Image (cartoon, rainbow, N blue to C red; front, side, top):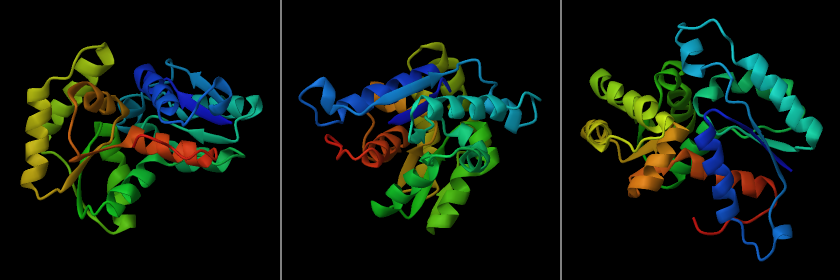
Length: 230
């Protein structure tokens, strides 16, 4: 049984759930995997805590919900929030079941596809935590992030557009992508699950590797299902 530690934010968790359904080879209800979802949207903001703008530590809430999912029967957990992986090591150590590491899996998949330098499109918190930078270093590939000016644009897309239920400002998004390409990136990660919705809504091309798609694929594999449609 897959446990989804969600609500970080709600739209991203909903999208992962739909994606799991869409990529499962099923002819009836019983062919789908069993899933239990925690969507605690009241979890304190991850980026604010990482950047020292808030003293509300999200870890206690995440740990509590992780145990709740396990007690319900989850045998493997997925967290559809890249920024929340700042707490991954503590959470994985505390919980008695495997926890999929979305950033590491995404970088490994990028490398396997031939990527040599990965552009990072993510929240300020994920960048400050060096989640993807460390994953790239571990995988032996290069990385780059947008300039401060273009990072402000990505932050606006995440918080002012997607999290408020609006379509992404593609002028700001495209400017950040052009910055990464000018730095020699051959692929870019949508390293915030809100940005995965940009790929869905704006039909982005294969320059982008979607961390939510990666998490979906590995979650299905971890539950013994061979995904279809990727």
